[in-house]
Image 1 (cartoon, helix red, strand yellow):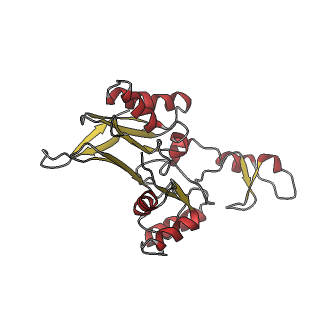
Image 2: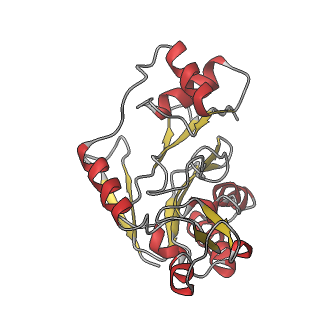
Length: 256
């Protein structure tokens, strides 16, 4: 049950290494923001580093030209093309007004925010020959997120969870929704109670889908015997498996 995590950390490329340093060399669980970056650099990781690429800058420029759409605001009106944003009750105030059309453009289905081309989460579980289990999740977050946003990646029990006595779980998808349900904690606890990995995974996903029918996400589950499965909602999900007796990685496709 050792855990280390970082969030809202800029200028450090290897976020997962920084998270491990938190676990190995501190008694904390989560460090965030500028101080997380300072910690990582003090522990020997390269930085500060400009992590922008020509591709990301081009994407950002086109997004700005499109009035910063899509984004993660809701029930707000922008004072200017890209904000600042105010709650709807500011309409008609000295801060400016906005038409119904502009207002409605800011209220969108959550499923439009998450997909193959704007999502980069990697979640992994590893078993050693002694039966010890480690899990980790690394992500750049949600494209066009509001500055300061923290998703499910660094939240133990949401993006990943493991117990040597039971098994492990990893998750990806709409982290803002999924972290409210701690799906990987749910999966591991369901397996602890005797549920097979395929049923545990489906159960965790269905709990979210009942409350948020439009959400997009997936989990994989694997018990301590190596039996594994996946479940998803809103997209077709793939996960890969490799074991010592296998010649190569095998990719499994899961449909909603």
